[in-house]
Amino acid sequence: MDVIALIGRILFVLLFFGSAMGHLTQTAAMAGYAASKGVPSAKAATFGSGVLMAIGGLMLLLGVWADLGALLLVLFLLPTAFLMHNFWKETDPQARQMEMIQFNKDLALAGGALMFFGLYAGPGSELGLTITGPLF
View 1 (cartoon, rainbow, N blue to C red):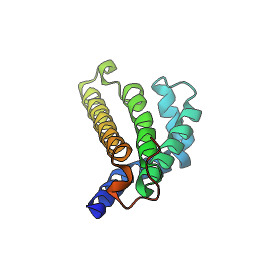
View 2 (cartoon, rainbow, N blue to C red):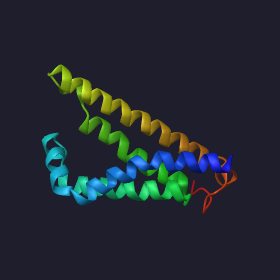
View 3 (cartoon, one colour):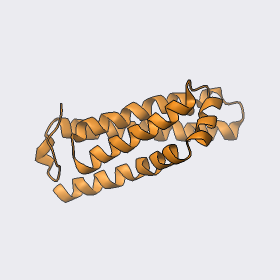
């Protein structure tokens, strides 16, 4: 089961590493989109969210306070769902559908990250293949 948990962590964080890379290497372009959605301090928020995803993903992947890493991902996902994918404000049906899909994806990923938090904050080091035990 240790290997299965590790594979699950790897598959889960791959999405965050790709997104973090975009946030950190294309900050200005992504900040423009965030600003169009009404995100305050869009450039700082874009860069900060990239750092949050990279650090949270790395912590969860390596099992270094994996519970905290999972919470960092939730801290990114929930505001992103509501600020960036507010489908209820869209008037175009196609745009509304796309934003709803992204909103639901972020909520589902937040749920997954909360599950990781619960698993690693509870049994923690018993899940194996981690560098440290849980922080919480």
